[in-house]
Length: 162
Ligand SMILES: Cc1cc2nc3c(=O)[nH]c(=O)nc-3n(C[C@H](O)[C@H](O)[C@H](O)COP(=O)(O)O)c2cc1C
Image 1 (cartoon, rainbow, N blue to C red):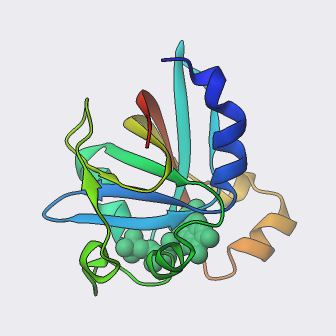
Image 2: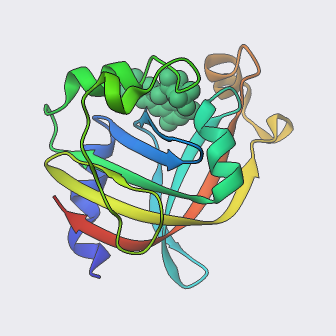
C-alpha cells in the first residue's frame, strides 16, 4: 500500500468533503472536510475530528473503526450536503441518499461508493480537545457552543481506488 502516491489526492479531495462511515446497529455516514494524514507509531495514520454531538461519535467510540470515502471533487455534492446536515439519529442517510455500499477488505465497516478513493481505518488513539490548551481565537471561532471535537487517530489499513 503506497500511501505517498495518494497524499496529494487525499489532501485536495478531503477539503471538498468526504464520507466518514461507521457501522454499529446500522451503517451511518457523515460529511467531513478536516483531517490529518501522516505517520504515527511507525504506521500510516488518518486523523479525523468528530464533535461530541455527532451520532457518528457513538459508533466510533464503540467499534473503533471507520471508512473514509473521498469522492472526486464536484461529485456527490448533494449527498455530501445531506450527510453533512442531517443526523443518523433521525435519518437512514444511506437509504435517503440512495448510496451504494461496498465491503471493506480488512474491517467490518463498509465503504460508501463514490468515484474516487476510500480508506479503511482502525482507531489507535482518541483524544478530546482540551480547551485550556487552545488559542483563544480558535476557541471563539469554532467552539462558541462548547461542542468540542475528539481526534481519532486511525491506522490506514487499506486504500482502494473506486
Ligand atoms: C463540508 C462539511 C464538513 C464537515 N466536517 C465535519 C467534521 O470534520 N467534524 C464534525 O464533527 N462534523 C463535520 N460536519 C458536520 C457533520 O457532517 C454533521 O453534523 C452531520 O449531520 C453529523 O451526522 P451524524 O449525527 O449522523 O454523525 C461537516 C459538515 C459539512 C457540510
